Amino acid sequence: MLALYGELGTGKTTLVRGIATGLGVPSHIVNSPTFVLIHEYQGRVPFAHADLYRIQAQPELQHIGLSDYLDGQTVVAIEWADKGFFELPDDRLEVHLSHRSARTRQVVLRAKGTAMRGLLDRVLQRCGALKAVTSLQQARLLR
Image 1 (cartoon, rainbow, N blue to C red):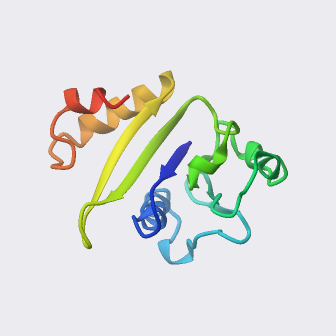
Image 2: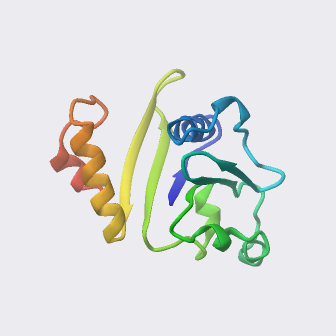
């Protein structure tokens, strides 16, 4: 479960398109589900993309069926996760996006829960050469 946070235009949907591509879903079919709230895709594994931008109160979340996708078999990416209130699972990877300039973004990853801490460690070890994260030690401080 990926919880995406960030202002308009920080790249949440673009990131989701990249994740979809990695899962074998053509990126050109991935659109922000602002009005339908959840889109489902079938790639190498099931993939659900939710957009909670229009959610105003917690009771609305209970009616969109988000919990149906939290089965451990489906990759779930949730834009505007801050509107997820208490419906988000405790075990999740939080992706915080922000503007650094008109053309650059800052990405901060925070692992919540044991499984996601392990996942983040594996990702950071594989991406050790990336400039965005200067060291595994620094990334661990973000958990």
